[in-house]
Image 1: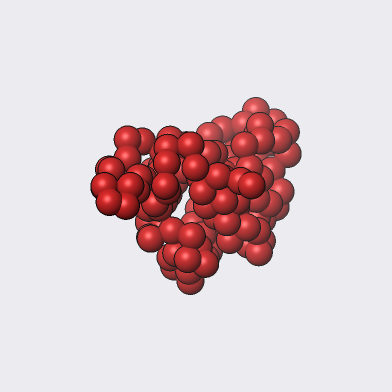
Image 2 (image 1 turned 90 degrees about the vertical axis):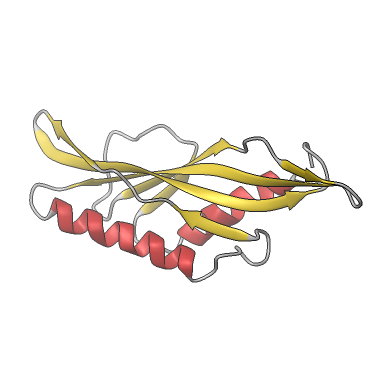
Length: 140
């Protein structure tokens, strides 16, 4: 049986699957970026939980990361903005990931343009997604 942490991360990954961009989990950056863009979900850090007693519960603010990449010769900024907006809409549509989280909150991305020799430039950002969830134990 998967842990709460794995269940929540799998639900976040599934939530992003319907987007036009290719969505991967913990993969290396591929040599080619799909036309619609690329999202790589990184598991991130669960952080130190707040603990309540009676009943014993561990309340996490798990910080997962989405690496978002778009490659285009022209219209890169617009394509990137469209992908960021689509991610935001997907997360806002279900802030609890089907009841698995208390709340899902993305943070604002800081984007960067990366030149690629002999190819169209990349526009990329890391979006931290804070997953507020509760478990019955640190390994549950």
